Length: 253
Image (cartoon, rainbow, N blue to C red; front, side, top):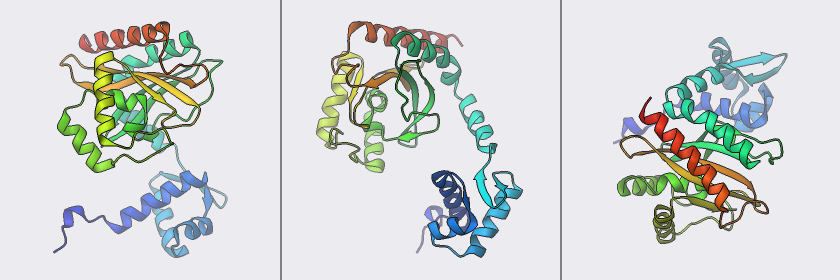
């Protein structure tokens, strides 16, 4: 017998497939979407017509694109997390003081989601834009969060998401990850040495609420040639300063 609670609704799934295709192709014509998804033109047209009517897709001549309605929804989601409002000015300061990229990441459904990113004038542009989802085990930010989650929650995430390799440096062994998380708790920060992106190193610290529960992480990222695997004291002090201010503001918000 089929478990209806776990059975996706086909029409809804197709609508989201079309939206994701429009993002992937950066806009597309009807026939391009149909070919990409191997669906009849008539089926895709019906979905597009509904999405246009509801304001989630716009049509420019014969090209369809996702609309700014998603930005409205994204801003609503972000506004519900107090950490975003509190951390943003400190992320900006981190980027300016380190001359690198600084980011804020939260965990949702077993994955990491970048919710804010700031770039210094001399920093290298990186793919850490708000809304981007990443594997927790492959980033310093994600490992900083995993290190302070309850063991049962970490097990749930690993069962759900696994430990896929992003580069040859990604940790893909559970025992190795457990050891890494213990090291993070001992020294108070996490490092990602080209584990998600080749040539990029990241240093991160966890952010906790007033009850001591981890609710996110902040980081500084840059080329491996500029950020050491053993971070210099000044970089760590800047990260810890930002962490302290964010946690104090959250506690007294």
